[in-house]
Image (cartoon, rainbow, N blue to C red; front, top):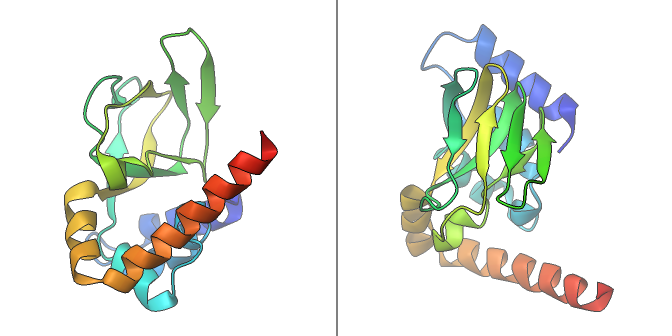
Length: 158
């Protein structure tokens, strides 16, 4: 995702009175997530309505390894560190995202993600997303097409 898209979304959030953000504010951010690339604007608006903003204090865990995957995260502001049991660490910044598979399967997290400073994140919870898929079968079909295309691409690159 571009930093520009995340930055403008973060600025919109920070300059808008609390509780006044609309799903429209998050469309540009969600459009840049590969999982959602095959969705129509209408479906993106439905997904955007599920989005919530969360702030994390420096040093706090966004997710912990082994916990059930319950949410998808897009960093709107700040940095976080992904720490795997292998000892390899990766830094996430504005516009980066993680946990998109948690929306689909709820499998345990494979890493800890810790805020390096204050972090502002857009989150979508699995429970609401699962309900949306149940009421919007064409949205579910679009996601399946996107996942199938990504799987094919991954298989051909091996």
